[in-house]
Length: 421
Image (cartoon, rainbow, N blue to C red; front, side):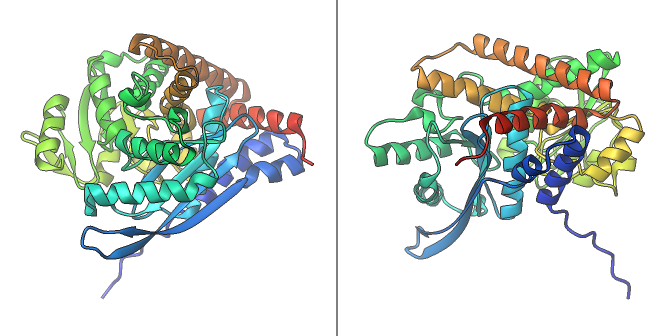
C-alpha cells in the first residue's frame, strides 16, 4: 500500500518575511531598521464567548495585528475563516503596509481575523460574534488609530455592526472607524467594486505594456467571491473572454467563454458555480493551468507554488488575492516570461477606495462614483508606472519592483521619525 506524499503546508508569514528580505537585501537596508520592519509592531490575540441560538456558549479565537504605523494609522481587513492563524494575519498585515506604500496612501498595515466558518452560523450568531470581537479589539481600533474593512467572508453589514458597536461605546457616531460600510452609513460609492476595478485597471496597463490586444484575450479567474465575480463582470465588458471561474467548492471551464451574468445568477440560485449549463466541471487546481492569456487568482494565499508554476499557461498573472504566489513560484514564472502584477499593487484598489471613504467620513463629505473611479484610475495607473519603471531599471520582476518601492517608502518614513523614546 502506497501513501501519497503530502506537500508541507506553506507558512504565509515566512513567505512575507522572505519577500521583504529580498527587497531589504537589494536596498541594503540598515540592520536595525530591517529588524524593525521585519516584525509586526503589535499582535493581539483574543478568546471571546458568544451565545448561540440554542442557548449554548461557544468561545471563538480572533486576532488583530498592526505591522507598521510609520506612514499613518493601521489599515486592513477582518476575515472570518476556519483556517485563520496568527501567522496568516501577520503576513496579511505586513502585505497591507507595502500595499498602502505602493499606491502612496498615508496608512500603515493591519489585519484581523476570527477562526470561524460563518456559513455554519445564523445571521444573529454572526452579528453576536462580530459585536463581541469588535469589543475585544477596541483597545486598538479607531478612526485615527486602526481602521478595519471587509475581507474574506465579511461584508458591508459586518462593518456596520462594528461601526455601531464602537459608536455605542464612545457615545456618538463614528463612521470613520471602519471602511467598506453601506453607503447609507457613510460608505463610499464604488467601494464594493474597488478591488476588482483596480485589478482590471492594472490588467489594462499590463496589456498596453506587453502589446496585447485585450479584446482578443482570454482570462481564467480563481475565486468567485466579491473580487473575482466583479472582476469577471468588468473585464468581460472589455470584450475579454472569461473561459474559467471557480469558487470554494467547484470550478467550471468553457473555451467559448462563460456568460458571467448567468454564472452569477446560477451561483446565487445553487450556491456554487459547479454544474453551470454548457460548461465542463474541473478542479480548482486545473483552473490555474487552463490555457488562457490572463490568470486572476482571487481566492486565498499560496495557490501558485513551485509544484504547479511550471504548468501555468497564462502570459499575465494578476493577483487579486493576497499572497497567491510563493517566492519559489515567482522565480519559475519570471524565468518562463510570465508577467506578474503583484498583489500589493494589483489588489490595492480596495484599500485606495477605503482611503477615499475614510477621507469622506472625516470631512462629512460624499463623492460621486465617477469621481471615485477617476481618482482610483489615476492612482492605480501611477503606481503601476512607478513599479514598472523601477523593475525595468533594476532588471527585476514586478513583485521585486513593487517591494523596492514600498519598503523604501516605509523605511524612509520610519527612519525620519526615529526611535521613541
